[in-house]
Length: 163
Image 1 (tube, rainbow, N blue to C red):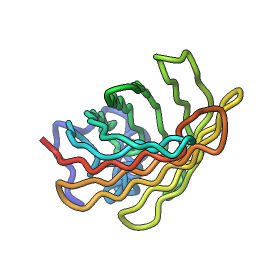
Image 2: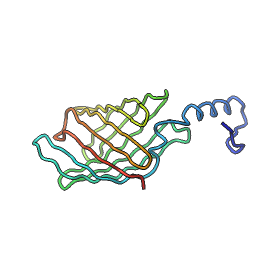
Image 3: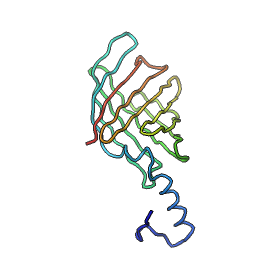
Image 4: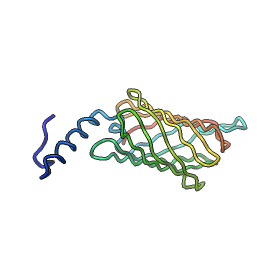
């Protein structure tokens, strides 16, 4: 992998460490998420009702490709959530991080794994847990959130397109 002179640093050790890190994450599953996404889907409730939901997301990826700051805002006629996450891939294929849901003042830990174009995560906080699946193919993304407790929501399924 050629290294541009503009990315070189004075200390040889720092240069080799940065080059190794960049090469290790060149094919990171996080890189395709970078940018702005818009879409819609369905939110299903415990009482059996469901309604359309609209979402917009943004993902900022670190230069090395191993860290992500995510913001996902979704709203239906009667429900809204705003999730912010900080995700790290310190070991290729293994994800850790934190999340917060600002409309309900909830937060917690995130753990997950990468399997090809899919990301599987579990989020947990006080009184709330959920499984999240993200499939990214080119400019399309499918997100499924399946809460296991702490909410009236049983499933959120959204298809988004990169803007």
